[in-house]
Length: 432
Figure: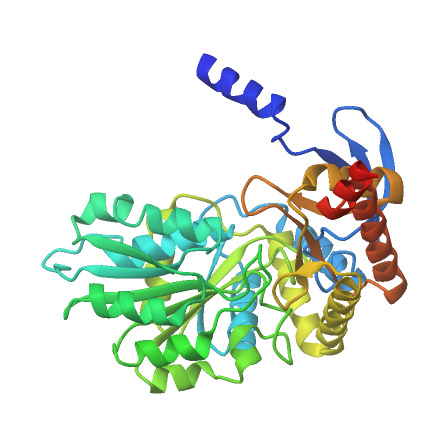
């Protein structure tokens, strides 16, 4: 433990550890938060929530969770393959299937488990079967800026439980440059072997950059490799992009059936912690066999099924989105407005979605920027300084008003002016 203690002391000393806050109350976009170390409380306007459609405090969603507790209790206390499956699971799977236009869905406690289960199941077939031998290697291609849950799953794809149990063939993982389809095409041509099972995986919307994967170009590349599996992580796409909030296929006007007709296999991961006011994740495809395999994978069998209130909240949230497309329209309108206001004030904004990463001048410490925004302006935004290129990560929601977004931008401009003096101005001052 001495190494851990020494390492963490260095983290503290260099200001790399994130400031921690405890939330006491939420009302719309306003929260009451407590500084973990000092105990000081703030009433703050939040721009760091992933509740993109504002459904966390929806009366219908809350009531659905309460009703589920009354009917089923707080937990199913088992995995779905044994005694942990309830009717709400079936309803949620059907609702997701209709939303994503993929018939078969399996639920998980979170995205990390969902993707690990997918890798175990697809790459290694999870369970050894007498007389059946899997002798085809798997090639996985991944965007270099994919989310950590994808990176973790593919990093373990060659040595997880499925391989240990079934002694399946090798899994090879190759990364391609961010959203660079020329590089992706080169990597496929270079590394794909005739008998390979090919899987490409990407965030649909990148959580730290706010940009969208070029799905049409990806499909054009893999149409030449029949049977390729196209996995889209729609954590930040569901409810946020597309005319109906359906995600990346909705955004580009492509149907999953068109992908099937072109000889590829679409697989979508949906998470419920952003647009669906809940927690958990789901893997959807047009293959009943894949869904059944996921249910019997070590990852699924080794944990409990999605709890009743969590399931009910996600189910009602998706129904709300499908019944009220105006929520999505408002979110997208707010994203456009906030981006335009930030650009007017000469902020460098990345991406094109409601996730609005703002790159600051190198001289500004994002952590200090965030502290001043909270303490001096009562606005809570997320500084990013240790897991990606330093930036302020701002998320707008369907609940934000133009007045609140104007307040944010004005506070950011004032904070930048306080913390940043351009080199030319400093030099002129020194000469004077």
